[in-house]
Image (cartoon, rainbow, N blue to C red; front, side, top):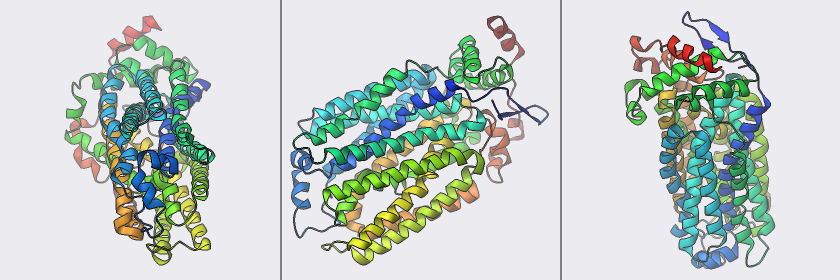
Length: 518
């Protein structure tokens, strides 16, 4: 592992041999298409809910209010079923991520990604052929199952095959593909918005493309060494580790994986283990970061960007084009995180990113409060300024809370509780996303411009929490988080006893058993 370090018993650090190989890059790219599936769905739902023919077919009441001259600007899209169209996916994702956490541990990360692509493909077919609202919602539930499985397996997969020195940057590829998926969805919506009768079907059916790519690609990628060893396939695990590191001298790293696996296999119920005192620090930090991620308000912009722009007075095409602009900013800004996360560290990016989002949210709220009444349109210059501020907000999120939420929650758990702990993170993310998607249009109708100050208050809380409570995990092996992170933090160290200080080494017997298979 180029630059990766593992603490020895004496407390010194030693580098693991290895390099960033083409195999790792290929596996990361293919796996990250699970993020593109997720991103495409996030972007596509907001666009089609602004298309007149889609509204006429499934939500006629919203269509009537949208074109009513005297309808309240803040309330024209408020409809429980329209919100359910967007949010139903995330209910299914919560259940699927629970099943996927078990599947990841029992069958591996790779089969779980294959299941994700199949679910997503079925959902896309149901949506593109939908003739009734019930069929449309059923398709969304299948899409949700795909999202739940993909979001559970992909970040774990990337984290476990990546060298520690590059783990942050490679894991950000998952978020990068999410943003690219959103951008592609916005472009597709813009191009299909004027296609009569079936434009919305093209938009929804496009979800099948990344699902097919991930399904085919999943037969090419390797399983992670940690997963193979965890399931008793040590010989394959060793061979895979040599393959992805590009060197034969991987025995020390392999011993560390075996050591973590020995501890993991002693845990019969990882979910029960999460309730024990030593698991509290990673559970709190790995879970609350996903609560915070959603309450930045990002999915308000990503789900409903075209709706927001139409609320301000943009026409349908102009609102979709504005969504394309914000999607482009989102994708380009995420690249910043790839090159900075393993240099600047997680904490700095989170604090600075939240600060940028806070400034933008307050400015947007102030402008809309001043210029957007219930029946008037925002003046042209002010509307463009709001679009610019939304781009600033998206920029701040894209290189901080967007990618780092997934990264941190995938790296803070030891192997014995990693699948269960990451399920809590994914489930929390999906539940909070469901709450935002299901309630935002109603909240916009009730709170109007003050909704932006609601999210601003959350951003202040996030900055305080990260500054005081979140430890830095940059460059630390995921199997040494307990020793080098949690037990040295000013607050979290109180959750560990002195008897927990040393994690046991892999037994010589296991090492000897592996040698004939080398």
